[in-house]
Length: 178
Image 1 (cartoon, rainbow, N blue to C red):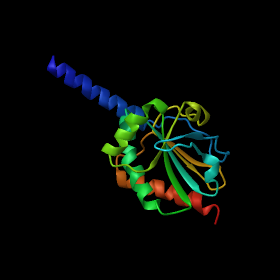
Image 2 (cartoon, rainbow, N blue to C red):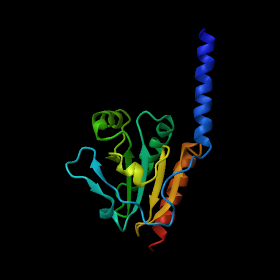
Image 3 (tube, rainbow, N blue to C red):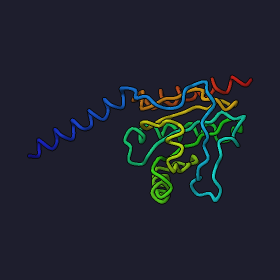
């Protein structure tokens, strides 16, 4: 019986990884105007409206605390956030898809993992507007407010490679306005 459970767990992990690596689709089309985004900001009284960030390159990472692939990408997002923290031209945000009622859970998760990037709490409107079909979903919005790049799922098992790829995408979007 114990061996059977081990095999079942192994199969579930392999299936989850295979599903993640098959590059699921979703997200808004690149080159089009970014969909509206106005959501509650974790720990803040006022919501954040994406239009207030026009003129900046914006990284949005859609995720959930229960999502194993998200737990792979979030440390990379933290590193990228730390890199651009003082840069007024780049904003790194995350969008938690578990809803505003999950604020306490998300706060605890952020604290336990020492993440300090800002978190928007999706009420379902962003998930619909941004066509989030699976998570994690990373979107880079160019300074002119158009979607520059969309990446759904985990595309590497190497955090350094994922970080370098994200930095390259940010710099490419940023260069469009120079």
